[in-house]
Amino acid sequence: MRKLLAFAGAATSLLLLSAPVFAHHGFAGRYDEDHPVTVTGTVVELQFMNPHSFIIFETKDAGGKSLRWQAELGSANLLAREGWTRATLKAGDHITILGPQNKNGSADLNLSHESKITLAESGKVIHNSIKAEQGQGGQGAGAAAPPAAN
Image (tube, rainbow, N blue to C red; front, side, top):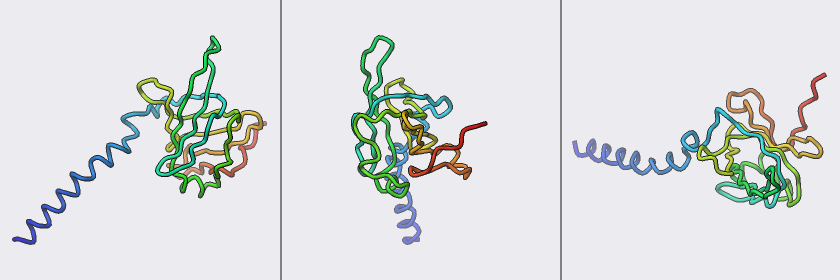
């Protein structure tokens, strides 16, 4: 009986302690994956780090006013496995990002799920996780852009 109570207490503790982890990684509660947005801008900085990397980039609105965006990626370790380095994106690169925006409408994207990053000038896709989660062949960072439709 004592062992059973100790086990039940330990299991309950683990469940309670894991709740903040699930809340921290609660993607669906914060980002609108049903209505991804496409944003084109200029890279200010790539923060290549753990536990999450970020692309900071700027766009201009219709009036020419700058708006600074943040796009959250996976860890530097995960990105490195896709072929990324600290030099994959540099300040001044023009990019187009397709991904879920924060539900509160802020200039905040989460690219850890279905998303795509394209270098605007060359059209080279440097990140494509669209359909990857369903096992349908999303591309990693080093992948070539998909062939153009004829």
